[in-house]
Structure formats: structure tokens, C-alpha cells
Image 1: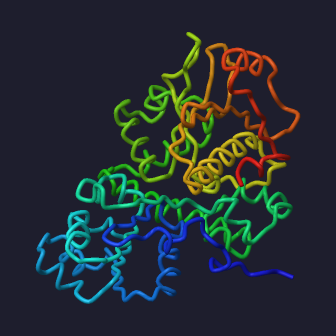
Image 2: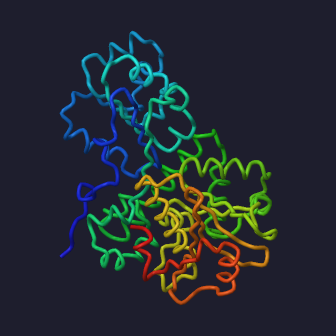
Image 3: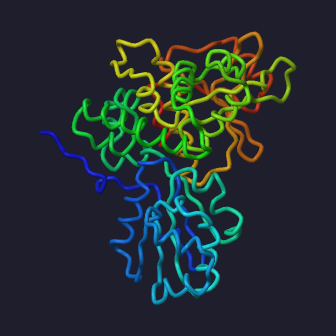
Length: 384
């Protein structure tokens, strides 16, 4: 029997009721299509508060909240206990508009959702200093999917997560054909539009070409000079594109760790994709695991991002994440630094695959952070 999965069956990591506070702004941000609006709508269905909900796509709403006109803004909200605005990044000066509400209406609750550019481009930044709580929503985490599947079933579906990722619309898609269609639309219609709009970037072709290069180099050291040469653009432009891709949550940068050895690499970085499905859609590669040679890359990307989700949702952040590599090729995939305490991990698809020389050097250099292996047998303990 086939069960139709809906988003109402999945409990997200955040409970808005526990997060909202009077005269504070709760900002829910992250990539498009990860469920920010659904999270808000589900909260509003059950709240006893009298609320008004708007969208930043509405021209009239833009005029009012962007006006900085105290009288007009306060009259607009008269009589309401909660104000919710979706797509808030569309409103120029939204931070000041929300500040006026928070400072002048006693006891009001305010929720604003927006794509990644909303918070990271500081559109709501300075005016709301001390007046906001920001939460970051990712594609569905393995911990959230426990509402649908037990640990055994999560492992059985591991290949799907590695290939198609875990965007909500992908998880609820009826079949693999629909999953691919969702991912192609995400890349072409949503993510690229956000990226190009954030910094007035012009060349979608260069952006796609850059993403393809990053997809094939996922988990490997990235050279800006090499990327610039292949794309026939200058290094500064490469750096700018990578920065925007990170701000719009398409990719995640991982820097090198250095403490003790002269030959530790720190100048270069690695890049992972926020979601495996997005990575595979960029290169149009949806073959089964047995018919592809990049399983190790998919595994590294998946585990790294699931660990980020876990730490974010459990409010363990800020944790600093690094890789460790020496010039002679010894490498640790993931190093975590939490309040000065180091933990280190090899992310290996095969439970039998590890490098004894790397382990020996790392343990000798950093004896207080013994190296653990996260593989396809034990990974759930690492990400749940």
C-alpha cells in the first residue's frame, strides 16, 4: 500500500509558539521552498491571538511598511495582537517598519519570513538590534523525518536522500519523476532568481557553469584561480559569486583548520551544497548509487549538512566547522570546535574505509580530539 505523504504529517524542528515574545520580531529565514510559509500558516491556524497576515509581494503593504510614517503604520495595525508578514525581503526598509511596530504597540507579537537574502543582506538588520530572534530553516532534517519513518526506514530510504535530497516538495512527491521535476524547478525558477536578484548579478550562464564546477568538486579543495580560468572571469568575480551563493543558501563553505603543524592547509576552502538534490540537479545526475562514481561525494555532502541541521535546530550553535588537510595529503573530513573543545570525524560511505596514517598523525597532533568514523552503518547516531 502506498501512503501519500503531506507536510502536515511532518513536525518541524521549531515551535513558533515557544519562540515568539511580545514586542520582539521573530524572523524565519532560509532558502525558498523549505517550508517557512507552511510553518507560519500552521501556527496561525491554532493561535487565539487576533492577527493580520500580509505578503511583501503586495504593493500597498510595501508602501505602508516602507514609508517610515509612524501614524500610517500604527493606524494600519490598530486592534491587532499579532502581525505576520511573508516574503518580507521584498520591502525596502522593512527593518525600520517592524521596529516602529515593536516599539510603539504594547504587547504586539511580530513574525516575518523571508528568503535567505532577508536576514543576510541586513534588510532587517540594524534597526532590529536587540529586538529580534532569527531562526534558520533548512530542507527537512533526518530528525524531522522521524515523524514519518523509524530509524530502520530512514536507512532504507538513504539512497533517495543521497540522490534527491530532502526539500519538502521532494519528500512529498509521489514518484522519482516528480522528484526530479521539483528539483529542476527549484534550481531554475527559485534559487537562481534569488541569487541573481540579491546582488544584481547579470550572467545566469556563468552562475550555472560555476555551480557545475562546484558540484564536481564538492568536498575537494577549491582554487579561485582555477575557477576563474575555467569560467574566463576574474578572481574577484568568482569570490563575489561564491559569496552570493552562500548567502542565498545554495552552498556552504568549509574552511581549513590550523593549530599546530606548519604544513596544515588553511588558505583554501571546500564547498558543499545545502541539499544533495540541488547538487545533483545542477549536473542532471540522478542515477542510482550503483551506477555512479561519486557516492563518496554525496555521502560527505549529506552527512555534513545533516550535522549542521542538527546543531542548528538543537541550538548548539555557534559551533565552528572545519576540514583538516596537510600538504602531503593527509585529511580529516570534519573538525568541530565547540567552546574550545575539538571533535573530529571521517565521513566514509564504506565502514571499512579509513586511513591509518591520517588517524595516527591527527591523534598525535590533537590527542584530545580522537578521530571517529561516520559511515553508512552508524550515521544516524551522528545526525539525530
